[in-house]
Image (tube, rainbow, N blue to C red; front, side, top):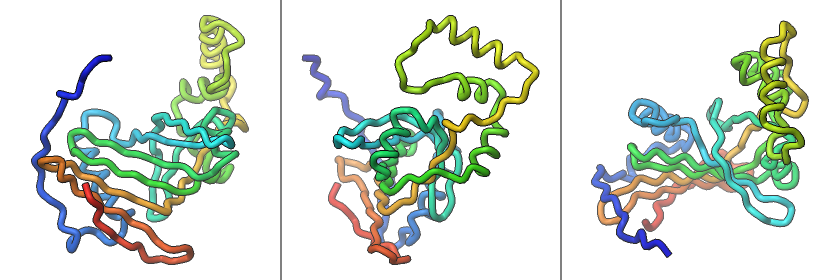
Length: 213
């Protein structure tokens, strides 16, 4: 077994005062996301999406956040993919944003639901033609029945054709409606700042609690 227990990074950031923290988790997300956009080297909108299938087996992967508001977070994918099948079985999902330069992460839990056909069509029409072609030909997450060279040939033929590329029915967006947020900021001596936002059913107010590191 490879011992990597010595790998350690010390954090030394300003502490977060719970009495001064933003009361709306969507507003706090917006503040942190804008700061991450300014300083992170990688895609700040990358997030880990975790799903659970009908056998309660979890699965995680990185997807890209494409839109957010004061009520939801939106991403797009193949509905017939592994994640799409999981969401069909169990709509409760988790999102995780991690920004190493900011030394911050945000956990979000909630329900995923398909976006409207109009929204999915609009977003698909704005994508680069290369992305459109790959979405059309890919049976995402399924075992390949042809060689990669054959798939690339199919892709190039479609990409270089003169016909319009329309959104396939198996591809579209999901909105994640949060029920839970946790904001984490690394700090010195592993005394990290952690704050959770929860709310009761049908309530419009969020309960804010500070958590042990």
